Every structure is written in C-alpha cells, then in structure tokens.
Length: 593
Image 1 (spheres, one colour):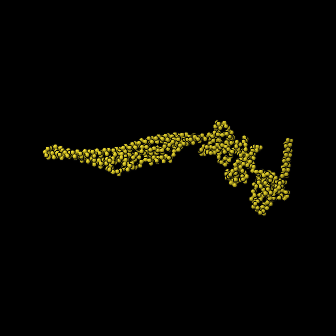
Image 2 (tube, one colour):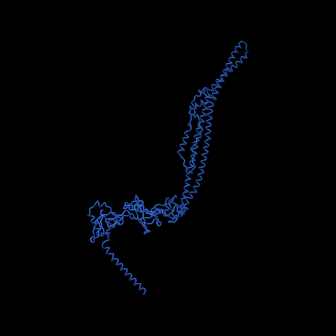
Image 3 (cartoon, one colour):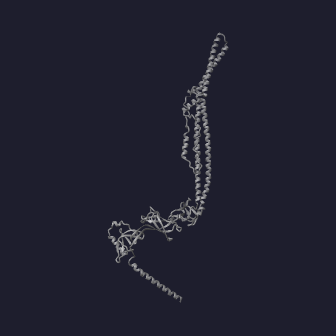
C-alpha cells in the first residue's frame, strides 16, 4: 500500500512538471518568433562616463627586495605570514620579517678572513721595507755627497779655490753640491677608503730625477794646466806653495853658486901668486862644483814639477772630484729608483689590502642583508603586491623554501592611508579621460559602500605588458586616487570604477545596440507596427550603455534593440545601392557592445 501511494505521488509530480514546461515554451515561443525587444527613446540628462574594472593598491609602499647576490639565488628559511600587520612595537624591537639562507656567505667570510690576515701581513712587510730603503738611501747619498765634498776640498787645497772654480765652471761641473736627500712622493695612506694619486706620484718622481746633475761627464779633460803654473793665477794651495818652494830653492842654489864662483876666482888668483895652497884651491873648486850641481838639481826639480807633477796632480784631483760627483749622481738616482720600487710594492700591497677590506665589508653587509627586519608599519604582502609577477614574471612564488633572486621583491608593505585603483583603459576612451576627473568606485566585496576618487595620472604610452599578448589592443594605465582613509580597504580588492567625463543636460538617447553603423552612417530600426521603419540618425556622445541621438529620432519613439533577419538583409541591400557621404563617413562610430 505505501508503494502504491508513492507511485501516485510521483505520477502527479511528473504531470505538474510537464504542464509547467509546456506553458513556459508556449509563452516564450511567440516572442522569439515575433518582433524583437524595443526601447522607447528617452530625453533627459545623459552621463558620459567610462566604466572599467581594476584592483586596489597603495599609492606608496615599501618594497623589500632581496639584496643578496649569487646565482641561482638564495633560499627563504623563514618569513612572516602574508597579511601580518607590522606594528610600532615590531619596528622598535627590529622584528625579523624574513630570514634568508646565509650558510654559503659564512663559508666565504671564513675564507676571506684567512686571506685578509695574509694580505695585512704583506702590507706591513712592504711598509717596513719602504722605511728601511728610505734610511738606506739617506746613508748612501750622504756618503756619496761627503766623498764628493772631500774631493772638492782636496782639489781646492792643491790648486786653490780661484783656479778650481774657473776650471769647474768651464767643464760644467757643479760648483755647489746638493746636500738634499732625494725621496719618492709622500707615503701612501693606510686608510682603506683612501686612493693613491698615481699621476701625482709619477710627476713627483720625474721631477726628482730631472733635478739631479747630468748622469755622464767626460773622463778626459782638455785643460791646459801649464798656464796655471804661474803663482799669480793659482790660489793659496799646495801647488802654489810647491812652486814657490822650488823657486826659492833655485834662488838659494844660484846665490850659493854665485858666491862659490866668486870665491873660486879669488882663490885661483891667490894660488897663482902663491898665497894659497893647492889643497885649499881644490876645496874651493869642490864647493863651486857642488853649488853648480845644486843649481842644476833645483832647475831640474822645478822643470819636472811644472811639466809633469803639477798637471798630473791637478788632473788627478779634478778626476777624483768629477768621479765623486758621478758617484753622487748615481747614488741619488739609485735612491730614487730603489725607493720607487719599494713604494710600488707598498702600493701593490695596499691595493690588495684595500680590495680585501672592501670584499670583507661587502660579505659582512651581504650577511647582514640575509636578515630583513621591520622598518615601518603596515600590512605585509608577499612579492610585489600583485599576481602578475607569478604569471608573467617567471618568478617562483614567495614562500618558505622558495629561492629568490637579487632585486626580486620579497615583501611589500603598502601605505594604507593612500590607496588607489589602477585601470587599463582602451584607446577608444582614453581621449576622454583627463587628470582631475571625478570617479565613482565600487568595491565588489562591499557593493553597498560607494567610494569617491579622482584621476591622478593618465598613461602617455600604451601598457607594454599587454602588447605581447595582443599587439593590436592599446591599453593605457590610469591611476585613480581614492579619497579618504578606509580601514576595511585592502590591496588587491577587485573594483569597478566609473570615470565621470561630463553630463549632457537634455538630450535624446537610446541604447548603443539600437544603432547600426553602415558605410559611415548610422541607422535605427523604428518600431511603428508592421513593417518597421529603417531610419538614418545623427549620433553624438556615448557611454557604455547609451548613445546621444542628435537628429532623426524623437522622444518616445520605440527602436528595436536587435534587428530581425529581414531588416538586416534590407540594410545590406541598401548598403550596396547607397552613395558614400564623405561628411557622414567622418563622424565617430559608437563601439558595439
């Protein structure tokens, strides 16, 4: 019995359903087969606006990017959850928002420390070698200068200052010896940040070398020293004293010779008269011969000194002085060369040291950048704050364990007090949009809350991100600033914006789908019973729903929203017979919806 009751109920329900379906089909069939839907032309204000969808985002935000270098990237070990609100307390306590893997950096720092210590030791050795070489140069140049000075004193001592100055001037030798110690440019700084001026260093070294005496002097002196044998031409020196001594010895010998000669002549006269013995005469003859030999010896000694010993001693003294000058020149140039080599080693070691310091500092900074701390308050958003990075950027989604590359955004902390909507507007409407236009904003998550804003920026060039997908579609990025502060407003919320271009106060308008463009002209199908009238109209401004009718249609007249098939064939036939009107062809055509 219960089964039978169930069957009866199922049969009644099925019958009722069939009746409903039949009634619905019967009610809808005549409307579909008959005439199309119509709309009565209206007169009144018409808002010209641009409707577009977009997403909420912050005008200003702090982008936290990965600043750690390396390929293929660095792994995220820890990260705060998305949507976390960073507070003032987090900023004060430097809360860690992101922790990146730093194991490789720690290994590099350990190796760098070893290299750094070795480089620091090399720099210390180079600095000490520079100081040692500088002191050695002082000793070498001082010894050479002293030797040259003593050689000049010996030269002056032999010939006298007047004659030696004349000879030295004629030969181009230095009359005054330079006692300064040549040094390289100032010592390079040990400050890591300091840079050594190589150009100034080379210029200073060149000037130090150029200031030295000539490197080579003639070794043979074409000087006639015989003319300086005159005591009047010589200064007070050994040579003058020697010449005077020889002259005095010759004068004494001549005087003695003269005396012995006179005495011998007297002895000869006395011996002839028998007043002197022969032995006494022979004794006078001996003294006469002896004095004569002394005169000859004095003359010979004077001649040998003036012809041989005097020029030899002069040239020997001059040669010693010239050679001492050359040794001083070599010592000074050698000092500059050796000091330059020591300085070059010092600079090389310093450059290596500075490089190691920078690398060490850079590694420590990289290690510090592995820990990202809170710097400002706000809402934490992963990545750049939009989803396009995942689909078009080729980047891995930010999460724990993900690998991020250098300069890849990890977090974005937007400024919630300055929110905006970015929309992409088609090139058909972009000429209507200008900076400063008022905008009505609807948040899809909160449709009952209406927001207001204004256009703050209009893109000058089409958005390049859309061109590779559809090159023929030109979209311009437009920024709309939202007025006020709304705590419930979050980045990424979907919105619909209505940009209020202008309002036409009193016009006739119909839906856009009621107007059909044909060869630059616009037509409406007016419903006046059967048959329907195809009428040309002049259109004006339009929005996404309605279009202004300037001429050809009156208020209250009904227009067909979708033309029947017969009317479309008729329009095509009229199109073939119609003559093109250039003026009408220039009129703007409303977009098809």
